[in-house]
Image (tube, rainbow, N blue to C red):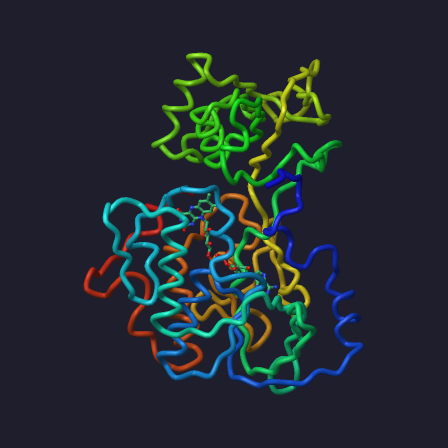
Length: 388
Ligand SMILES: Cc1cc2nc3c(=O)[nH]c(=O)nc-3n(C[C@H](O)[C@H](O)[C@H](O)COP(=O)(O)OP(=O)(O)OC[C@H]3O[C@@H](n4cnc5c(N)ncnc54)[C@H](O)[C@@H]3O)c2cc1C
């Protein structure tokens, strides 16, 4: 595998296009039309849970994913465990069983999702991105772009469950697109016996730094704040990274911000307490740069469909009792309902109820099986959730 900057399968699914351009592109052709009652966009855990519930309720639906089911989880770093415990990740009342009773890894969870799809025989049109939604008098028209050519569908209701991790948060600095720079940490092996600068100071950055160091890399961390925030770093790794920094095993540049990347080095500007650049820059020599500064949602389908996006986090306008957006017949489910979550509030565990509300709104009945298996009667107040 070649480490590339942003040639990544997880990058923006509607890359480079504005909603208007898509409308023009897709409206130039005539398409055959398939009809259904509900179209679900996105086959992450929450989209799949909704599909399972609609199927059980006998509702006619079509389900699309731009990539493979569980795609967001498929690009996580290898062998990363969920922060959430397994019973909070279970969907449609189907248990996760494993031999160790610990938190599951991304790979284990993908195997679980595949098993759910096979067990319930859920049909998902994978590798078929939805690129346009148009409101008609009596429902919606959806345009998709699978590899074999554009398709058109009609439905009465649409549910957008496209998640909130479509593309990385770019720093917007010179050199960020160089081949030794990546916004996706996939495997520490690539950095064995190499110097790597990790940019960021939350879970993903700290985890990448520790794993790279343990697998034999020379690691430095650049973080814009003076110290790690214990609310943003799991307590299973925070003392570890602090120990490695204190012992000199990992070099730490607190209050620093990369302002330029070249093949041999990164220019780090010092930041003050307000996170503004102040003082003289440092030149840090490195072989690789891993930018772990989080991800953002692609909200253009909402815009195309006419959903209002509110506030700085551009949260879709929806009724929390039904998950209906301001566009009649159009619902939002899963982490997509958080917009560009700057601080994560929506996780799999507190999105199961979105499915219940949508199914109840469509069928008049709350689904029998949601989230964990009913026998466990598992419920946790929102205040207990911590950032992943
Ligand atoms: C390292 C790491 C650790 C994490 N740990 C946790 C954790 O412990 N607990 C937790 O709850 N969350 C965790 N998360 C976040 C977790 O990945 C999300 O909470 C979860 O995937 C959200 O589920 P979802 O169904 O809402 O959306 P997603 O899983 O993001 O699914 C969205 C789907 O929509 C598809 N899609 C997008 N656009 C289109 C389109 N135009 N047309 C068709 N399909 C489209 C995508 O391909 C994707 O499959 C972690 C994330 C990372 C990176």
